[in-house]
Each structure stands twice: as structure tokens, then as C-alpha cells.
Length: 603
Image 1 (cartoon, rainbow, N blue to C red):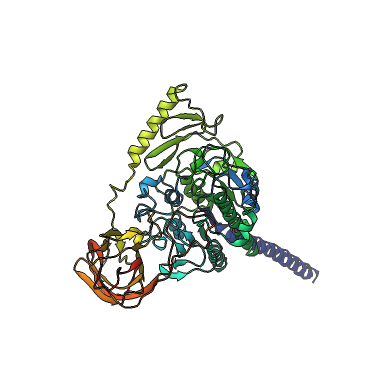
Image 2: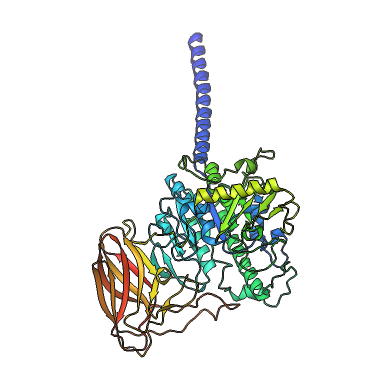
């Protein structure tokens, strides 16, 4: 009996101990599984890009004229690159950022009239991340193509809201587009874009997302809400432009006011990440697309937007990933916009981009190590026939003058004759790069504008991409955001070089204005053997607007409240031909002014 009791007690103890072991083992397995599950979710990515903001337009870089605490905090809580280079103007930088490739390889060579388009066969960061399970959204200025498949929705972005042109004519409740459909914006544009970005983050807070916020400011027109302008209108600027060129102080004040508005919106993004408990699992990047759009404080560097000197291409670049990347680290090695894609793909741990032919370098060793071995490299800057080459120590400018950037960051003393071997090596590197990338020009770019892309419902043909004939003129010499006017004769016409990608039937809407003295305008739209004829009978003659919100006079076109007119439907056949719009039998001195044609696929 005692033996039986002993065995029973022994069995109970064995059972008890076994239960404890299994319980703790299960807890450990559950903990490990949870940890593994958490580790499997890659970090979110938020890229915020300013438009025409210079390196010197931040209090972090020593500019006491303004205060940018939210942008500065990204550097203070993350990593800052002290010598990060983009391209001299907007669309080239955006193409490099999204592809990791030198922009001439992507088809980009200009900022309007089709030259801003990034070839659809390029694999973008958005496409790669989408393949890796990310939700992708872009809210802002795209500037890498309007017509699908150049459109952001065709280049990897699930959601798009903003404008695809190079600049916009009004920043207060303007005409925008949402996934191809024309809509009216709400409030000040930069605020509106941020709001849409915050909604995107909230909607996808439980899955990895890539949010691209390419803002429209401080690009002209220089429009900013009153509360921001009031901070600068009567302010004495402590820091001024250092060179011989004349600084437009009102322009500078407007630009800085716009940057402070950007800073508040960066603060909104940061606050939303904290609210959603996503801050520690989100990589946030802040940069600009080129140098400042005016002569103003820029750290003593030579050049501004459009220049291939340091002042035209050096950008702030801050990367924050809380508790992963070291806080406050400053990286002195040179880096470039082509490095963003490979670096992010490495950080998120995706293999989806394997095998890509890219020009950028993965800079994660510089982010994570204090003594990383890093070889010197070439960074190439090119625009409008000018090409310069940057190494860690030197810059060879577009006139083959050599500067020691460590001793002479303002590029004041040419040392090419003192260091002929360095000069020759950089000249050879420049020549080899130009030969290899073979940049397109207006004369060599033969790409038509596309219509009827199978995966898209809407396509726009704006005045920007058209060619006027006869008396018709653009509203401004800078094509982006222009309209056609001065239509005085039945012999006048507008044409677009259009390739229809697939047979289909399309509803056509014309965005127009028409003076009161005209009681009817006959319109004929044709492409190949297809033709649509209709008559416009409703006048609509609003005034030019935009100047009432400008803080300084603009050089771009003013805008009008263009009205949509449903012309009808037109069947289009696959193939390339001129899309032609003609006006017949109009009674007034002029026919119509035209902003754009929008095509909606109905069959």
C-alpha cells in the first residue's frame, strides 16, 4: 500500500513538473512566435520631399531667419547626411529617388512637354515594395509623367492625389486629381496633401505601407497662408545671400514662410505616427529635390536651382528610425539620390528588387557602423548640357574647373592647373558617364503621348503637351499649367502626338472658357480615322486668378476657373497619329481658351 502511495505521489509530482515544463515551453514558444511575427512585419516607409527648398533653408543648418523644429528633430533623432546630392531640378531627382538609376537612363531629360516622363518599364521603389506586401500611396507633385502608363497609379502606387505637372498655378483649393479623376482640393495645398497622407497611414496602420509625400512648396507661385506670411512680412533677415547676385528679400521671406508651413506638416506626420504607435517601426526620410529657387542664404555655396555646382544640388537628407538608427549621427561621406532605393530595400529586408541594374549604393554600413570601410566614388550632376563630377574631396564643374571642396566649399579658387592628374581623371569620368547614359534631348525624344492604357480609366491631354497652330498661343512661355488662348480663325488648331495603346471608346470632356460675345462654337476632335463633332453653346468667361494670393509677382501663367464640357464619345483605334482639335463656325472674335482634354474609357 505504501509502495502504491509512493508511486501515486511520484506520478503526481512527475505530472506537476511535466505540466510546468510544458506550460513554460508553451509560453516560450508563444513569446518566440509573437516576436517572430513582429519581426516579420517590415518597417513602414515615409519619404517627404520639399520642392525647391535649399540646403540652407533649415534652422538645423544654421539659418536663424526661420524655425524648423520638426524637420530638425528628424536629424536630431536620426541620421543626417552632411553631403547628400540630388539633381539641379525637379523631375530628374524624383526619377533617381524612385529607381536608384541615373535619370538619363530613365527617359527623363526636361521638366515639361513630355521630357519629364520616366519610362514605364523602369521598376520603381513603389512597385518593388508593393510586390513585398506594402500598401503604397503618393500625395503631391509627381512630375514624372501624366498619361498612363507614366502615371503614378501605373508606376506602383495604389493611391494617388495631387498634380502630375511640374508646377501648379494655385495653392488654395485648386483643381487636382485623385487616381486619375479630376477633383477640387481642400484648403492650402500642402496642408491638404498632408491630410490625405495621414488618412492613408491611418487606413493602413495594421499593414506595412510606403507613403510618398512630394510637397509642392516652396516652388513658385509664392503662395502661403496669412498666418505664415505674417511671421516674415515685416521681419529683418539676419542672414542674407553671400554672392554678388541680388537677393529678392520678399521672395526669400515667402520661401521661408512656406518652409515653416512644411515644418508644421512634418510635425503632423510625426504626431500621427506616435498616435498610431508606429514611430518605432517607421523609417522617415526628409530631403529636397534641388537647390533653392532664389538667391538666399545657402551656407556660402555657389549656385542655386538649375546649377550643377554644390549650391544647386546639395540637399538636406535626414533618416529617422527610432531605436534602430543611431540618434544624432552625422555622416560625412558623399551620397546621392540614387542611393535611396538600394538602402531602403536593404533596411526592409526584401528580395523583390534582386537583380535590378541600378547605379546607387546601399549606404547601410554608414548608417549602422562607426568605422565602415567606404571607398571614394563619383557623383554625377547633369542638367541642360552642363555636367559636373563630385568626389569626396573635389568637384569638377561643367567648365572643367577643379575645386577642393574640403578647403573651398564655396568654389572660389580653380585648382585644375595645380592638380592636372586629378582634373584629367575627372574629365575622363565625366566623358565616360555621358557616353554611357546618353541623355535624351528635345530633339532626340520621339516618344508620343499615350492614351487607352488597359489598366487605366482616365487620361488627360493638357495644353502643356499640345502644339498650337496658327494664331493660338500659350498663356505663358513656361508650359506647365498653361492654357491655349487667342483662337481667332477656323484655320487654327491644336495637336497632340498621341499613340492609342488599345482599341476603345472614350467619353471626352473639354475644360474651356468662352467669351460672352460668342453664341456657339463648333468643335471637331480627330485621331486617325476617328472623329467627334459637337457644338459648344454655353459661354463661360471667368477672370484670371492667382495674383490675389501671390506674395511676390510670379513668372508662370495665371489660371482661370475652366469649365468642363462633355463633348461626347469617340471610338479610337490602336496606333499613333495626331490628335487634332479644331473650332468651326464661331461668332465671336475668338473661339475658346482650353486647359485640357480628359478621356474616360467607357468600353
